[in-house]
Length: 189
Image (cartoon, rainbow, N blue to C red; front, side):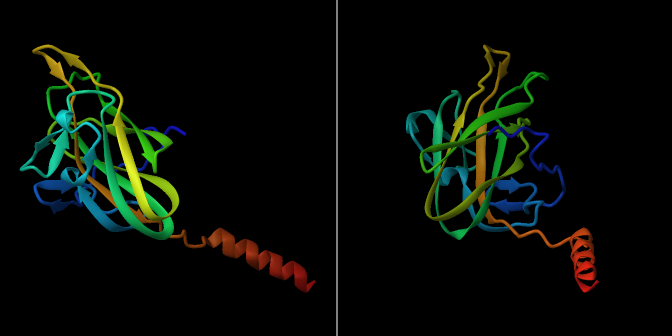
């Protein structure tokens, strides 16, 4: 499964929240899920700690190299879950580099490829579903698309935070009620 910017809900809204030196925007999942847990980038566990560095007062982490992994661990109640991944770039980007591509693994199983906005010096949060989960859950993020031209351009993903939110069931729409009423009327005849 591959998510792209067009299939994910991404807001550039003004609602934001601060966690340490990280400003998360949007602070609330636009689908209405409630954020149960926010982990700063520095709370992740890099698989190669020599290739991840602290930034933004040590609250976030970044890497210079593609195919580097970081794992965020959470103990989740049984429910449907969404993840908000907050990231930005550290370095100068060409106009053509607009997205970070990351592979997402849940409990060591490949889950999806997700594209995140690559914006200079401004965090953006991208939300995606990870489905029904419970108990110890590891979310591994692997950055895939580095870009570097010596002394000119340098794409370096910065992970500011990872949020876990419980999915809010969709409320029935007027159309559902209309169909239920129509079915009830047909049974009366």
